[in-house]
Length: 450
Ligand code: PMP
Image (cartoon, rainbow, N blue to C red; front, side, top):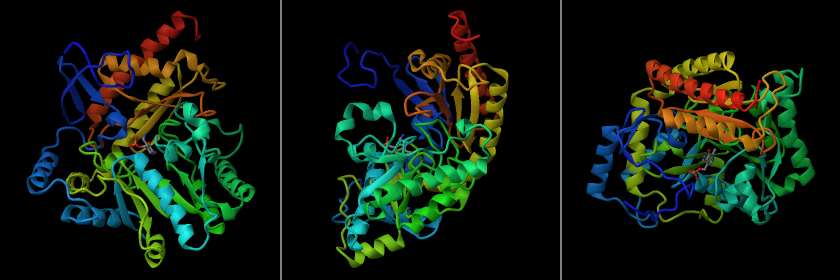
């Protein structure tokens, strides 16, 4: 094909064409093999080419693919809702289906605001979020996100939402214990609520483990417990954005389960359909649905493709596959192994300041100086260089950044399918090591590191 009519991420770049995938591997049309070390965008969590998902897709398509949610419900969507209610903590029993993570977080925002309106508290309509966060690209979701590079162009149009800093243990004040740091960070929420006025605040949104804006940054124990207390004290809803962490990625059903905290709303995406169809969801507590049921009785949200039987059947097949193959447990076990292997790289190689993660959501942060933790200037694009080198060698990894102040900070996410074996992790680590060694040699040659 000589000319492309497709708008791609980088307009001037030529991309290889995908041919097929099997397990953790993807193959391009030139026959090159790649380890999908990040499940694309932390998405392909059951691996590629799983036949029973293709079968479920075909079965549903033979019956009916699309029936509009204003006209019909379907077995697939009801069973999917029931499965999610079974997995979700507390009374998060209700699901509103959408097609992307951005739609899920924006829907959560709207339901939170609507809830307070129906409770007779219409001034509670601001959402507090954290500067180290990414909740999506649509205007409402971006308003809640602190990812500076993604906000910058549209900043004047965005609501001024993010107000607090997220916990970032690697860069906590020198000498401060993790326990104290957890409380210090969480108490920032209380100060923000007091400053804005609890009567103005509808909800607080946070990723249980920070993904794209930090690179698998895990909060210290105690942080989310204190967040829950503060939300309860000031009547602020807590939205856990589980788009990246949900459905087993961190070794439990949902990331927030690691701290035994029950959110009021929860968003899902990515692993919910493992890339087999666009599918995402906003989960809501009994209390919120009962309030809205007794009030207007109508949730003001939704899209054409919300709750379509085709996507629901595919997502249901994915969740059943996850359950049948005990992928929550596998993610915990293989995640511990992956993190240990990444830690070895961090000990052995220059550039790596920290290896971190939870389950199979792991990350590396690159620094110029391991002692002082000085980051590389963004202009040097160190993470991008490692990602490009890994790609060349047949390994896909995901960029993350902005950990330090929303702009500086170079990190990557390593998040292979939850089905990965130890031998495959070793293969992944081998390629990653080659890529990092090669980039550090290049930086040494240019005298950019010692
Ligand atoms: N929330 C989180 C935590 C995410 O990681 C992402 C995607 N990286 C989104 C929301 C947005 O999801 P989508 O790209 O499917 O709109």
